[in-house]
Length: 405
Image (cartoon, rainbow, N blue to C red; front, top):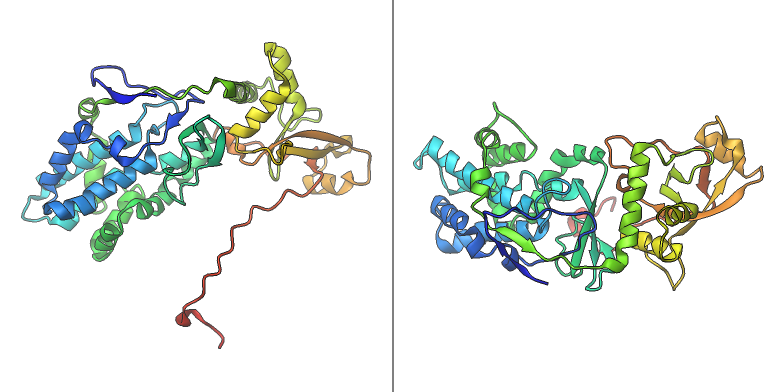
């Protein structure tokens, strides 16, 4: 696989659903050649000696790059878009801040606050726009990326992602500061939080504040109104030859077909005889849905292949050689026109059919619009789905945390 730099005059590479991208280190992502004009400008404006600039700015940029990787700012957007736009926005904001307030009325802390807020403003889009799956060198599922744990590095070799419900965009402003704290070098965050006025302005800017607020918010609002395309065009495009895992393509194609059918109404949701139901635990997709897909496209392989690949790409792995993602459900005709509680309560007293299918835990992976269907009244779990409990750590409390003694 080749990772290079395309000429800035060429068309930028965009993400296609199912594409496997390499997990890259900060050294690969933030090469001095690609971002030299930005790094030089930041060094000039920071008012910091080289060692402090490296610790505060370069570390922040490296952490940010490893977190967002090549994720675009919107589905099917330009590869590296979040990284590039963050760096350009940060540089322009810092330059505008210095120009407006003058070098004598600003200091290194104010400048760091402006740059870091502008850089991290859209970091939540790495989380709220898509679900990221980590794979090994063969393209097999390893784990789902958990952004609040840390970056993808050391989790696997490749990653791919799928758009999720637009309803999750409401979290953007809420989680930006949380992710910023996670990404920033500790010395930088503690420096910012040592000055309450600057820190309050910084947090307000990250929360999406607009004109009329503090200096940082005011400057970033101005920058957001500017056209930064000319500066972005100066950055060499990422040129990625994605890993070809064609043997996993059936699962991706099925997901695309399923989502399109749900969107245009050709596939029913929560219908009495339907094969897709929203349940308390997620979204149930009946095994017969896979057979229907196979028949329509004249699938050259067994539906078990599609079934397994779909489970793999949605993060539901095989257990002990069996389909650990197979999810048995109750189905009953007696549930018509009754509430969920009543229908579930009556199911056990009537004849029912056991159905086999798959449970996708996050409905937002299947329904990508701003609204999601309500819970089905026709189906429920025949068995309890194991609770996803956190790992217990035996961390002892400090003496000052002890109570009631």
